[in-house]
Length: 88
Image 1 (cartoon, rainbow, N blue to C red):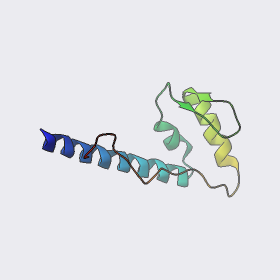
Image 2 (image 1 turned 180 degrees about the horizontal axis):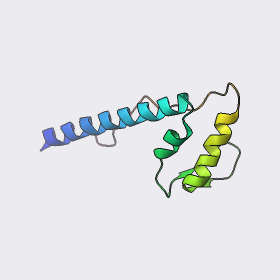
Image 3 (image 1 turned 180 degrees about the vertical axis):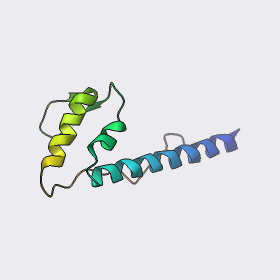
Image 4 (image 1 turned 120 degrees about the vertical axis):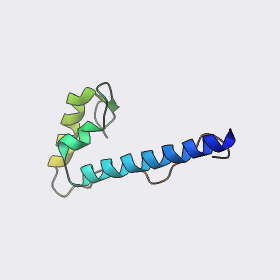
């Protein structure tokens, strides 16, 4: 049973890393529609020094404002993942 959990955790980690890389690529290329596509309809984003953006329309507005800043460095995904389960 432990082996199945480890394989699932490794598979989950790979999926998370692939998704994070795709999100980072979308942000880096300033692809507004692709960036927003990673959020669920009820997602929330807490932009720096601004109110919480709730839902895709508000999230799209936040990303649009970020992308309109010339030469701004957009956020990228974290590269370090930590398991909550000991031994995985």
